[in-house]
Length: 223
Image: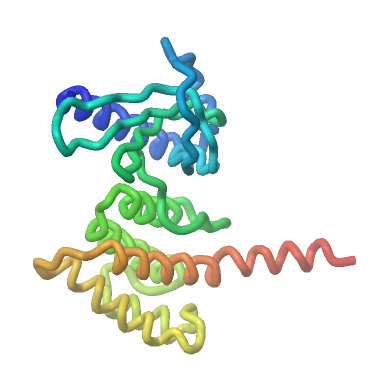
């Protein structure tokens, strides 16, 4: 049972990687498959990590374990995109990305932001913080900072040039501290710490990229 579960986890994580690589294609095209011997079992509600929809699915398989202390497992097929999700003991694989999507991002910045969100959902908070560090360096350079500078100077650049909203200086200091610890010291970051950093990154990306484009679109639509 344990071996079968490990194989299933590897398959699910591999399919999640496929989704990330081909993220711009609709998931239905990626997993346009008919699952064999799918049963109608008890309905389970969850947020599908592949398509992002909250769904209720009764299609899939239930698994029993003979090992003491091992959680009962359920695998459900998403009715929207056919992606398989393992639900066991309160855990979900693939995990749902933390935070919200941001529109109008440059491709490299969008990729790093999505990597950070996915890392939190996968239970890798230290990787998420390091990815956010890289993300903010890209934002600074894209907005005019010189390439090859230090992370602290990039954070200072974003603050000094008013890309960080007024009153958010505490966030800038926290980002500088958390980013340096994750990258240079033997410090394991926690999920709450990573979520805070992604909250800040999301806010910053919306202020720098999404809201200006939405404002231009609103002016264009005005009579």
